[in-house]
Amino acid sequence: MRLSQLFTKTLKEAPADELAINAQLLIRGGFVFKNSAGVYSYLPLGLRVIQKINNIVREEMNAIGGQELLMPTLVEKKYMEPTGRWNLDVGFFAKGINDQEASFVMGWSHEEVLTVIASKFVSSYKDLPFAAYQIQNKFRNEARAKSGLLRGREFMMKDMYSFHSSDADLAAFYERSKEAYTNVFERCGLRSYCTLAGGGVFTENFTHEFQVLSEVGEDTIFLCTGCGYAENIEISKLKDGDTCPKCNGKVVEKKAIEVGNIFKYGPKYSEKLGLYYKDENGADHPVISGAYGIGIGRLMATVVETSNDKDGIIWPENIAPYKIHLIMLPGGEEASQKLYRELSEKGIEVLFDDRDDKTAGEKFADADLIGCPLRVVVSKKTVEKNSVETKERNKKETDLVPMDKLVSGML
Ligand code: ATP
Ligand code: MG
Image (tube, rainbow, N blue to C red):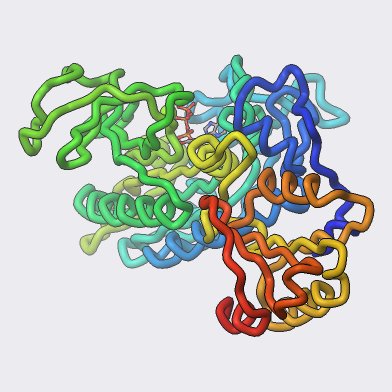
């Protein structure tokens, strides 16, 4: 992509009402646009990051047998009324043209919709287990939409639901989902802690949150510095300095961001919405379920919160919008154009600053703000040595690398 063509521009300043670092940097870098409080557009650079995150999520969900689908945003009253979740404050409601009252809620969670869909396809124990997921925008009337993309009113989520004939089968899948979740966050450059939390609606009454340590997090957790065991303060009997109940390590109190959340809801919605299966003897039972969420936008924002410096974002390689930020400086015009073509032909993702109305200083500042892993500069000085100057975003020192070596080294 040529920066001279990109319709968005970097900004010197973030909007005055945007206090969160994630939103400031993402807006200044041209990744997102704030449309309303808690409502953002993903601009071309931001959408590239989102798509990379989504592909990692897809790979990990597919690896544990998840099947991708896409459910509607408009969720009709008939789905939510039987479970008592129609009239909740969380909803944004919508009215059809002939309706006196709202007949739809903008989907904020899809247990009901998928349970009803499943009830049309599941009849026997042989139809179980299965898991299905979607990546979709959710709508929630959040009272405090003030942490940038960490808490939106419209936000992208991956939500998966699993369906089983026994508690044991659900429990086994639940454990596999924990590994898949840990992989997702690790591949996005984040260390997450699977944290015991409350709010469960089934047997054990517990849920698990995936927490990433950050001072701006809304959650407080007790974390074992030895084994990584963690509990949310909301349910924990631990306190700072305690001994870990699992390994005798030391427990510390930390602020954290919840990037994902899994819980078992058992037969709760199956019973209310008629999702039953017949066992080997022909007896009917409600299907047993679990739900598995990841906040995609919150994940992107968490990376920005935890990986930045005073100059901008430092994207981890796997989710960076481009691998290389190529800068053309005076005397390097021809060589940089050629290098851009060569790298692009080889399938290497390059953001090419080919603008002729910007100073070197402005170009360097934009490269730091946008945060691609490798900055490559082509100037009169480097051309004379048939080389380019490289600098990794998270390092200070620069290197002089022969032009052909750069291309072969990127493959
Ligand atoms: P929270 O406790 O942060 O309000 P939640 O428990 O309501 O989240 P879930 O309904 O389980 O969250 O949603 C799954 C995931 O979606 C969460 O773990 C979080 O990463 C993300 N998420 C939830 N609400 C928001 C929001 N308002 N904005 C952005 N991401 C969100
Ligand atoms: Mg939560």
